[in-house]
Image (spheres, rainbow, N blue to C red):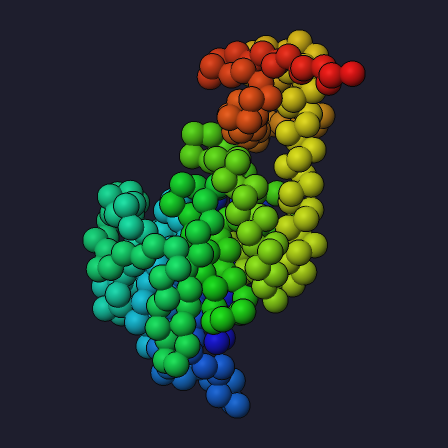
Length: 278
């Protein structure tokens, strides 16, 4: 199965300033490099560009889906759905969210494990919540590369911010991707990740370090969100303070579920650590 990426300029908080749209094809391009008319899946058409328009025209786009319904991933769903007459997929139980985001009614719904046929091969839906509650990934053939949306980036980190983001779910998603060990990850923003396990380990370490800072800050006596934010980040937050604040809340929510802190949505408190019996 062949995966091709198009970087689409779009309004996004991602540092790259664009979102990746992907086409999965049932077969590799011909020997002259030209695309064929094999069935294909269009993923995350964030906006229209001349290059993406041409690519869609040159292929037989039979299916269309998004990894999640954040605005910077869905801008051209309705247009390409109408032009290609492709089957539009949405996550089961999230069709209203999909409709509100795209302006498009889905034709079919998927659940984790759903296999979308492409010729003799299958693209498989993987559960990948955390960055967004409806987030999925797409495995391009058995043991193939994974289009991972906003689960990972080759450089930097992914925003997992409350109330949309669930840090506990996100960490679990990273661990599942690590266990799957795909040959490559194709992210929603930035270049291909050609060393998936190394990148996933870096992202897991980053989250663990941030969580420990938040926990240490609460244990040292900080109570309000602003106090915790100031101590948890040792850098200038100009332009990203709102994202950092939402991330700290997501960490606090995770720590509260795990009984490491008390958090009421406004103030945090440390949970007493029981001394071990002699």
